[in-house]
Length: 312
Ligand code: PMV
Image 1 (tube, rainbow, N blue to C red):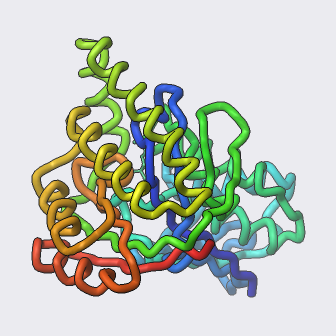
Image 2 (image 1 turned 30 degrees about the vertical axis):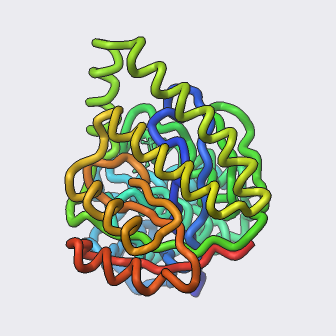
């Protein structure tokens, strides 16, 4: 048996603007993970892989899967990258506690857990950079123009300062971050949200480019604040980033309600995280306010609340 796992992620600053060349800051969520287990199976076909994706209730053969099936695509890419034929029938089981289509990187985490488990199974170790590159190719199935932030932060599993098409810069948090994440109850399709924003940008380039630049300058300040561990400043910058995401038109009432309720319950700051139009928001809290903020989010309609600490 071979097993590998990958974390979820949260974008703390800079989503959407990162697609247009601005920097963004993301951290891994090591407490929520996708795990892939590979076992030799007794299947009839000696050259095929049986894929079992427990959380989405799917079970199918690699050779019968569609070309654009992301899980199958990740398997094919990895086998090609390590230059190996499948010599034994395998069963590949994917289990995840990262909610799907919700801004926490479930797609990239599944790809990366698949890539690592196969590399390990075939004793062909792949560097993190290669793992990230393969996962990026799978991300392109989900939406045509991913910035690459998800695959990088999940493959390197460290806080990252990220600019599109530049080497990701890992950094250390000056202080641990206590977070509470609340799910708005709606899933969101990154490709659609990014596509709709691109249409608005084309209609009013000056307006939207100015917002992207403002987000970029918040990211520069947040990068310093995260490294020094100035929690109050981080919170205020998150609030400002949320306002700019509202101005981009990617928030929705349910997310705004959760963000407001987290702030009222004592969070240092809160914003939507990821593509928006559904999915999760994230609040920075202190150990003293974490319970109250989680309770306030449930009360305000969050369908899933995650309390976690990202250790410095
Ligand atoms: O919702 P997610 O986790 O797919 O994050 C999307 C982040 C965006 O900046 C909106 C898109 C991207 O490719 O960076």
